[in-house]
Length: 283
Image (cartoon, rainbow, N blue to C red):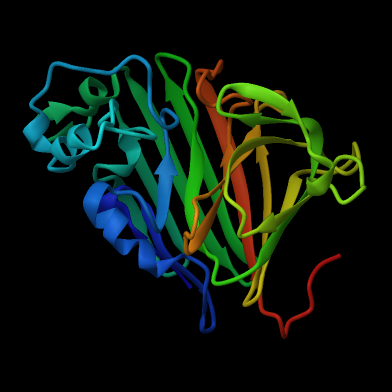
């Protein structure tokens, strides 16, 4: 079962297989504070921008004053998409939503807050084989979209995937440590709950593979993440796990370096499938 809150930033507030919940419900306070946590979106920009949009009444968003006191420069970290209502239509198994720069929030066009015009669309279908998501953006300036979902991590875990030999830490590209590959070249075997805020460049196992494949194994569930983007040259994912956090974020992104995107048009297609420890897993 997948539950969305389109009027609250198109947040995926719950995704379950039976009684297994993979969205960390303990991050609800973060959602209430500044629309982070749970199943937050990224777009049309990633994290903190260097050029901050201005020229609007900051009191329109209660979280901005708290962010300034905390030292945050960008009032809309990860893009305006997560902070405002989306227009949508839905059924029991599908939802389609749209957000445009000309849409108004308390009388102000969203492009004023974001600093550029844009159109974003989000479609999700819930099938027996998982949750299928198609997320798109067209923008005036280079942009990026992604999923910043906070997955439950109640103990130890591992992230598996085929990756390039370099990873990104802040703005610096570094060689993959051998402790992250367990001796298998290009195979990421990242142990949790170690701290992380790293960017990785995925590789398809074979040239004929349709998509990229990641696995999050935890003590209570396994999550398979399959995804593709419009450009294989502009795709990455971020792993984010702060010290002592009850969650880990694995964020598919439509840019190689999300802080410096190059595309004005991006598509991200993602499939999320939950497996119980009692259920057989894919090879």
